[in-house]
Amino acid sequence: MVIVHHFILLYSINFINLAYIGPLGVNIFFVISGFLITTLCIKEKALTGDLSLKTFYLRRIFRILPVAYLYILIVAILNYVFKLHIAALNFVAAILFIADLSFFRRIKFDWDLAHYWSLSVEEQFYLIFPVFIKKKFSLFVLLILIVAFCPPIFFWLQVNIGSLNNGIFASFTRFLSKFQGIAIGCLFSVLLFKGYLNFGKLSLIITLVSIFMIFYIKFDPFESLSSTFFNLLISIFTGLIIVNNIHPQQTNLIYKFLNLKLLNFIGILSYSLYIWQQLFLSNDPRFPLSKYPVNLIFVVLVPIVSYFVYERYFLRLKSRFKKVQ
Image (cartoon, rainbow, N blue to C red):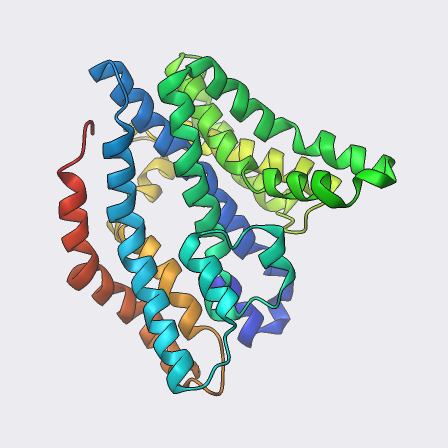
């Protein structure tokens, strides 16, 4: 969805009304990520009696950092060779995974590293949320409820109280709203474990209605009172799609579609695709490999090579620290 979004922005303005599809794809990923990570943490704690933060962080390091830092290194080399004039602060924000902070969002963030704002949100989620699962689960539930449902309230306060529309409160509200989709994913994982989300024969209908509503509402990437409310609904519908399609249902066409071999393969490559596509969909005349249609070859080829030649080595290291399936 992100690749389609970038392609539309660069080459096909007739379909500009579909430009929201990229931010929607990122939000869907956030919900999936919150659901997956919470599920793995709860499983480990339930099966072993504890959650090892050390092995959790090592698994995340081996999965995220190798290709993320390789990409930054490649961009730094290209920046030097082709004189792309990427600001040093952009590299600092990407390396430290703080590109989502307001300070870095206000500066001219270069396209080639712009997608690291979402990786920053992910890394901060990995760093903070599992600590609450380990230490006190009730506090974790309270945290995800606050993150999921308080941003609309905070934005409402900003709209109605002018003094809150800038400064620390405004920055905090914008920071918190980026984790809204992740928090909804976490919440659906908790509710599923508690046995509250068994929809039975209604699962297919709920899935179809959820898919329709996600595209009917349309994701709004601009932080505002209305966007935090409508994007919250989109995250909830995404959660409903997840929980209704994670169990084998041979009669469910949506389940069958989501488990096609092609989609599984795209899923395996999804992180690599997300990292590398930014480089080749820039349409920067200074960088020859970003020119259409040659760039489309590299959008596909580079992630495949990256995954099978480079990333799988670190994924094998990651598997040594796996506690549960």
